[in-house]
Image (cartoon, rainbow, N blue to C red; front, side):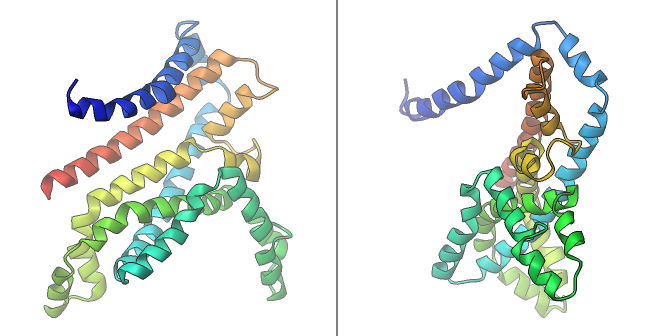
Length: 270
């Protein structure tokens, strides 16, 4: 075995034990009836509505997180290394929390009796409307962005730190506004890694269920919550659950692969 192969061996073993083997086990269960389990999943009432709900939630949450994340990363890239490191540490803290903890934190802050809700109620806003909004798809996208934005920031910050800002200065000296310089000079050069970051957070939110389960229960029509209902105490169709799990895994893997391809394409052109 070469030195490179020896260094890659731990990663290969980790991938095999914690990804390949579980996926194979789920695939065996899903295919135990041939294609009947997949047919039941597609024929189940509400499946296509849940698929559409997942697509809308994923697009909205990933778009919001990407737009905010690129703005935060751009601001951090302009700071001194010491301040950038300190703020990056704080921004990355949400990644250490599970989805359930994030959900309960937002309930305490923005729920019907939450601190922020009560403060806004004292300012004249309707507490019932503000608190109730958290338990809707829009509120779920808002809460999910809490742990999606740091992923965008972490992915984009090294690229923006190393970007040659003389190009922006040259564009502005020729009459471009800062917004035009950003849109016509910076954005085209970082579009590929930005799309890769979008794909990363899209895959995360598409397959996440902890935050959604805590905020909206199983009433929201998205695929992870349908999977949860199939494997909970009230569910008994495990081949169908395995088939749905494979479908969600396939979609997330496709999104991640697209992002990696875009990132690799960007690296080749540098």
